[in-house]
Length: 293
Image (cartoon, rainbow, N blue to C red; front, side):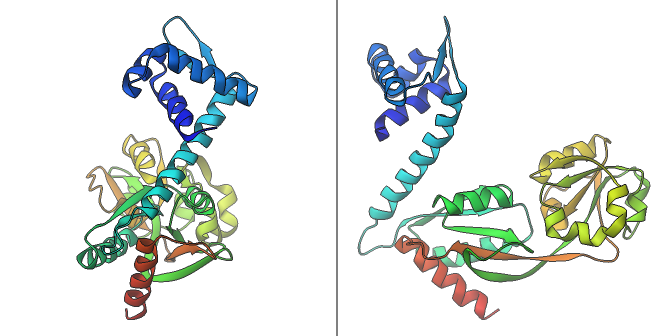
């Protein structure tokens, strides 16, 4: 499979129309159709269901779409790493992170680094820890920000000095919004939305045996949509305070756990992985800055 053909395939998959894809790629429709048929022959499977106006992906096509995007991302990342000017550090550093207050710390580090190396750019990917780890494993990210506890055996890491406080996000008109803090027993009887990794991040230990009695109504991977559900009055959400502090929604209130439950975050990068000059310099920079904090 050629890089160029994968780009063609992704264009058609995104447009869901061969004519529109051919126009965006600046090639003829017959030539594009021929390339797609050759790709299907090469893989020995049907990738598209062709309708009168649109095309849709088969199961095999959806799998290739995911793999092709990863290949394109990694290829372009590699090209960028080798196109650095020898005298001026440049390139793009890819960082994966969740929604947390520690993002401010990373922003400060990026800001200081950019003063020294103004031609280096950053690509930030927001998602949960599983997404970050998967992309680190595939070489699509240079660095990741993970909330502890987490398995660090595959990574070099630096622990950030900031602590994240767990609590519950509730509607403003909920009785819990007037509490200074909530115990696990206070949460009985409420529909609860929890992070898909909340149990791994210490919430289960904090809740103890009572956790099994809670009405865990839904799980989420990022807080934004969960906050919308809270705003609608559907339930309440376990969340890290830093993940909701920027939304400033007057209809929802963060109430911390009692006893207090704090977690720390780590900056990680894969062991024994070669990095671009830009990523190497940034790792050296954050090592220096975090060591003196």
